[in-house]
Image 1 (tube, protein in one colour):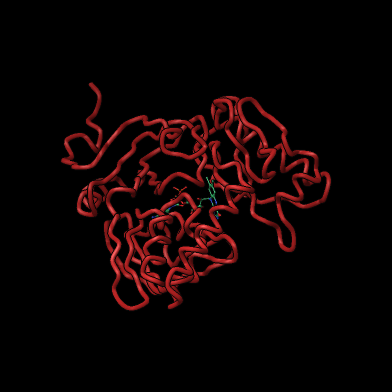
Image 2 (cartoon, helix red, strand yellow; image 1 turned 45 degrees about the horizontal axis):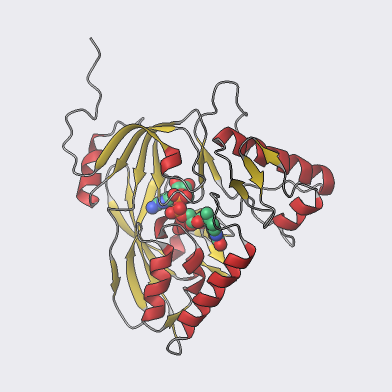
Length: 311
Ligand SMILES: Cc1cc2nc3c(=O)[nH]c(=O)nc-3n(C[C@H](O)[C@H](O)[C@H](O)COP(=O)(O)OP(=O)(O)OC[C@H]3O[C@@H](n4cnc5c(N)ncnc54)[C@H](O)[C@@H]3O)c2cc1C
C-alpha cells in the first residue's frame, strides 16, 4: 500500500493541483508540469501549507510567470502562486503605498499615477506582479523597481513573516540578493514623488505606445531573454550575430525585437531553451561576449533534452 502523501488531508481554501502544466501559468505558454501547484486563498492558507511542507520540499514562488521558463521535464516540489493571496493596495501617506506581492505592476503604476504621483510609470508595461518585480529588480525606460522600495514584507518556509528595510538587500541590474535564503516577498512599501496632475498618466500612455511599436506584444514571450551586457545591448549583439528571425521548432527570435524569443507556433520549453543556447553561442562566436539569461530557467530537462544551464 502507498504511504499517505504529506499534503493529503490538509484543509486548504485555495487552489491545489498536482502535475499542473506550467505553460498555463507562464507567458511563454510552454513548460512542463509542477509536481504540486498551490494558489493560497490568503496568507493564513499559505501559512497552513508551509507549516506542513517537509523541509526537503522544493518551493518555487511564482508571480504572473512572465519571466520564467519551466523545462519540459517539469518542476519538482511546490509552486506557490501569489496572485490571489497578496492583492492589497493601500495608500498610506502623501507619497507612499503599501502593496501586496500579487498586485500587477500595471495596477501599481496606474494607482500611483491616479494619485498624482510620479516614478512608477515604467511599471505600466511590465506584465508581472510586484513580487516578481521585487525578485527581478524589474526596470524599463530608466526606472527600476528597487528605487521605489522603502521596505518589504517577507515570509520564510517556516511561515515566519518579517518586515525588512530596503537597505538589507543588495541591488543591481536585474539582480536582488536578500539577507536570507528561502524568504519570499509578500509585499512592499513603495515611495513615489509628487508631481503635476495628469503628467504621470500621460507618460504611461507614451511608454505603452513605445512598447507596442518596438516589441512583439501579441505573441507569447518573456520579454527580453538576455540581460544587456555593460555598455551594449543584447538585441544589437543578437542582430549582429545574424540570429534575428532564427527558428527552433515552434519558436523564433522575433523579427521585431531580437532580444525576444516568441512562441509563435506551439513551441515547447525545449525549443525555447535550445534557441536560447544557439543565440548565446552565435553571439559569443561573433563578439566574444557571453550573454547572461534574464529569464529564469527552472526545472528538469526532458530525457535527452538540453543540459542544465551553467550559471
Ligand atoms: C512582453 C513582456 C515585456 C516585458 N518587459 C519587461 C521590462 O520592460 N522590464 C523588465 O524588467 N522585465 C520585463 N519583462 C519580464 C517580466 O515581466 C519581469 O521580470 C517581471 O518582473 C516578472 O514578474 P512576474 O510576476 O511575472 O514574475 P515570475 O515570472 O512569476 O517570476 C520571476 C522570478 O521571480 C521569483 N518570484 C516571483 N514572485 C516572487 C515573490 N513574491 N517573492 C520572491 N520571489 C518571487 C520567481 O521565483 C522567479 O524566479 C517583460 C515580460 C514580457 C512577457
